[in-house]
Image (cartoon, helix red, strand yellow):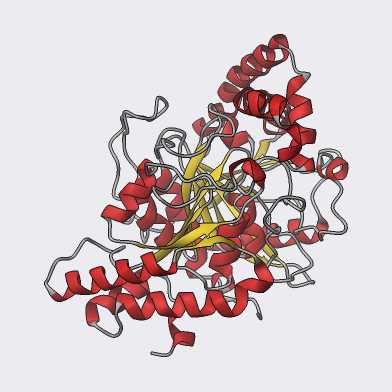
Length: 466
């Protein structure tokens, strides 16, 4: 195979080819590194490229394959990490001048688990600074660009993860999600991203944004690949106080079981028309996706979206308050080390009171009950991942952004698992994502719905013209 044929393989395809000896881990790694070198100057998806480490890991994997030592489906697969996952002896910057030269002395739990599974680390990926605010335009590292159109944002905060996967730079990546930061870049870049249930994946060694809302999770180019990555990183970790001691399912076992008679709830009324509402092109693509799900045998049930809509304010209050608490000392001592977007968000947190925070947490409890109560009548929720296509860098307006519905943060507030899968394109050839959310610890159900949709549609096979 040529490099051109290698870099857009799925993890499942690449893994099968390694076992057939069609190519080696070294071949996969070199194909990725060559493509990064050729094209990432346009996208800025990587902050740190660990080329020599990757080549050494690839040679080790090749030797292990030759000796009959297999570590599973991720063995020999090149991946990359959002640059808030701590990596021993490799700088972890969070895309900020604050941590520009910081080199941790230990690995995040998820990083260790991927290494044990035999993955090859290509490097650390760009993001929104500290996963907070919008694209980082005044930090030591350039903002990540969208591979589908360089004038547009890739979504955040896991922007480098989304862009690198869409561009064929790696086969899988890790992101983090506090209000939509895995799912939004997945939608805007035309890839798949899964926010697991709160507590399913350890956040130990992941620089926090908001302790009670942060989730760590996988991003890839297919639903099956996300299942494979989740299998490797899921599980209880005593080092994470929020880690859930819950059995880990086989996330691949039910992927092909179909969705006949599955009840899919659409919380449209009172949510889709919130303030400025949903972009017309996005809603058209979403409605077409619902028709596909109906044709697969699912039952579509319209739900009251008001509790989902209200969740935004509680989520944002908690997020900003907890983020300020984490960064307060550094912000007070060296505020100008932070980019302008993060400084503005920090001020929001500085002026919140304990009463504001506690009121938001009380609202969270009530909304949790109201949203979860819908599962008495439906099995999953379906909605657009983002209410509009990705903005242009020049046209971004933070105030206008707040007047659109947020379809992601209710599932951070509730901790429910949610996945974004490509479901079409706007007339301007920008990707749109379909989001499926399931009950707690039922990632398998969300994966099954997303996989069923993916397999009968072509959207996940389209690639940007770089």
